[in-house]
Image (cartoon, rainbow, N blue to C red; front, side):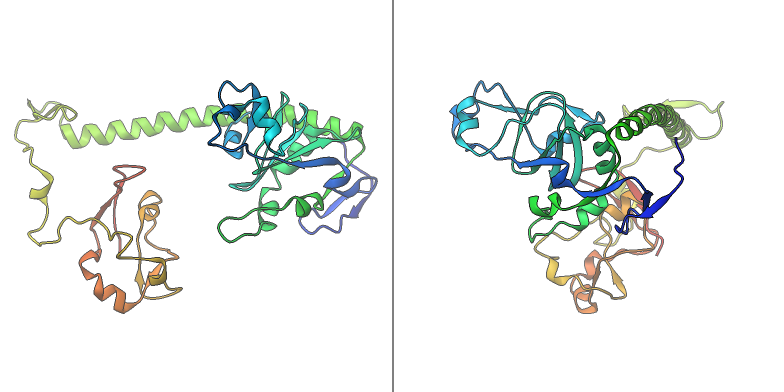
Length: 326
């Protein structure tokens, strides 16, 4: 990449210095920014046999930076019934909520719902260059969101976000450079993920064999009677989980239901922690953001977790387990 002779302060804290001949410009001077809309969902004539591409933030969940259509299409009647707009291909579609800051470039003409802002580039603007800028600015955009039920960035705030703008020729050169570099990095990531997957499967295999066959490869085996376990050493037993637990009444328990532990019961700090599914998934029993008062703890003492108890997830990711350490 070219090194520049002189730099200047962008006067945007998170951006810092930029080449002296670049500009810092509000997005509204680079793009025509349009909001989307949704036809009435109960009106079948707006949706059945529709052929107009209609995009929502949920459709952004793709590793490809380009998007051609969404999971739903609308009819011409549906299009005319609301204030959505047909956005020409090569524009940037920006997610203004859930989550804020995801971006794609539409490779076909599309319209969007109200969760998107569509950015139609002006003549001296490269959509691909600004795609790269916006893709690394998600945290900044998220900070600009407001709302009570969910965070959302308004069209007016978005339009006035200042970003660096090189001359068009440089935008295109930088975008091409990033295309080549990110393609190489993506290939490296894919190879690393395959290795991680392989070693994960190897680890699982080593553990499974040790806990179902033992460490002596010459040990005589018998059928366990459990299909997924298969054969086990002849002197091992197969018993139900409940026989491994203590004789205490609450030896196997489900965590409190929502009515027993509500948001109002959570306090900022206390010596009584709350473990949740995320604690198990992350194997994290050393930090938490959730506490309850001593009074609430005593009221829910039957749910208390002791050192070396085993916690198991039962929904979402089922069967992840880990012992507590404190």
